[in-house]
Each structure stands twice: as C-alpha cells, then as structure tokens.
Image 1 (tube, rainbow over the protein chains, first blue to last red):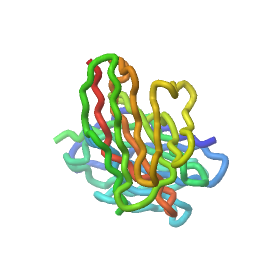
Image 2 (tube, each protein chain N blue to C red; image 1 turned 30 degrees about the vertical axis):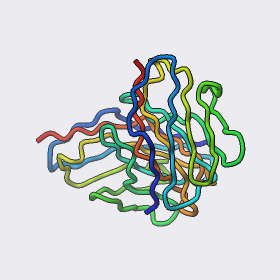
Image 3 (cartoon, chains in turn cyan, orange; image 1 turned 135 degrees about the horizontal axis):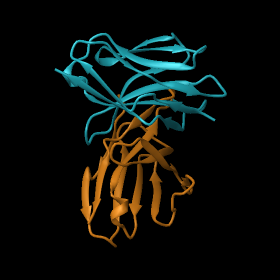
Length: 113
Length: 115
C-alpha cells in the first residue's frame, strides 16, 4: 500500500527565503510521486512529478524536488519565495498502474512580506 | 495539455434535494474517473472510482446510495448527491488518469453548499 506523510501542516517563510516542504512516502514498490498546488477555491495544479527518471525533478514556478530512496523522501523546495507562492501544497503517490492517488494532508504555505 | 472540466463550479441547494455534478474530459477519453471530497483546510479524500460502462467502486465509508455515480460515456462522469444535508457541503473534485504518464488531470472542483 502507498501513503505519504507531509510534515508540518503550516509553513511560514519570508519573501525571498528558501521554501522547504517535506514529504515522506511509504510504498512497497517503486513509487510515482507528485506535488500539487491548490489556490483557494480552485482545483489542483501539477507542480512536478517523479516517475523513476532523474531523481532531481524541476517543476513550474521555480519549484523542484529530489527523490531520495534511502530517506523515502520527496521534499519540495524553492530557493526564493514569492508572495504568489502562498497556497496549499499536496504531496501524492500513485500506485504502479498510476490509477489511484494517495494524498498527504497538505501544507499551507504563508509568505510574509 | 489535457483538460478536465466540472459543472457547475458552485451550487447551493436546500436540504433534502438532490444535486448533480458533471465531470468531463475535454480532449481525451477516460474509462476511469475519480471523485474526491475535500473539506475546508483538509486533504482530498477519494470517494469512488467511476468506471465507464460498469458500476462505480466506492471507498469504505462512502454511502453508494447517497452518492450516485454514473459514467455513461468515455468523456463524462456524473456524481449525484441525493437527499443532501448540510454535512454534505464540501468541495468535490474529479480527476481522470493520463494515458501514459501516470499522472491525473484534475477538474477545477465544485463547491456544494447545502442550506
């Protein structure tokens, strides 16, 4: 069975500071991992995905994530936070068939001006 | 990229009435679609898997008689909330899997408010 755990339901950073959102996964098979962003009253937007290719994945809006098998982690980072990055972020893992997604509990990012 | 739409984007209904939410894949076919419910400040919880031409598969704890799912075509799945109650008020999101990239395409969501 697959699952993800997001450490920290709320993260606050200053504008221009490093963003680090944590995600650890549990999977009995090589996982496919995703990060999504959700703005208020909107659906999910894909930031990036890991599907067993390069372990360092670059996504949209300057975000990237690194797959570390030894740590079962897939943390999301961005070197410099912008005000527009304030949103809810979800880590997700899918099963080998890629059909069913399992979401983390989400991390709310606040950017302080 | 592939697009999934939902209609309506928001709906208000009275307690005891039923409301239908549509999920469409606009430029691709989807034999499977997923329905999620999201309460405020919480994550997405999978409610059911919609299968074209067959019965939906419901997650444990989801009342199939209350949340009726119909996947009548390769591009349309509908979720009907029957005899809605205020506790059914939530954000409902559908998704459809991409053909070969192991990702899901999510709809923009439907905000249901039951008064």
